[in-house]
Length: 200
Figure 1 (tube, helix red, strand yellow):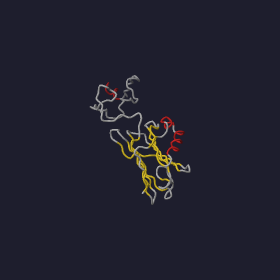
Figure 2 (figure 1 turned 135 degrees about the vertical axis):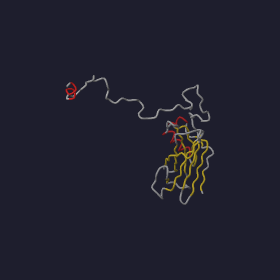
Figure 3 (figure 1 turned 45 degrees about the vertical axis):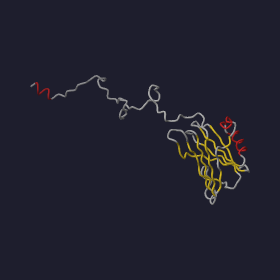
Figure 4 (figure 1 turned 180 degrees about the horizontal axis):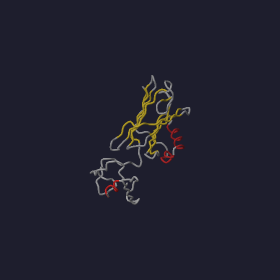
């Protein structure tokens, strides 16, 4: 008789509300595989070895070599500059005798894996053949009297060196001295090292 009574009843058991937490808990893993311990040195730990083959970032970067060349039919200017370390980029300024000026970004062409040098440059084609675009086309012909300057920047965007050459580099240097605080600090642009300007 007791078994029949129990079978006819619904058994409900109540637990304290804080016995099980049904909320989501942050395990901290975010479903990622924990990082494995490696033998790579920690640069922040002075007791661990650091690869000394990598050149340190220089506080003052300078332009060591420079080349420029112009070929006609159609007009094509090629510029390249090498700096003595990894740079933050550079620009080319071109000034005509009548005051017309173009400013072109220099692109990274090559770099030393250990940070010992960067090579920057650009190729400018005749703007009469396609719309003028800074860094890619130019309105200047090979036989025009032109002045040039190349500036390079560090990784913070500050100008660390400026070199000038051409028809009247002093006039262009004066302009940059007034416009660019980095050139002002340098005292102006210096003569370009080992620069060659040729026209074919």
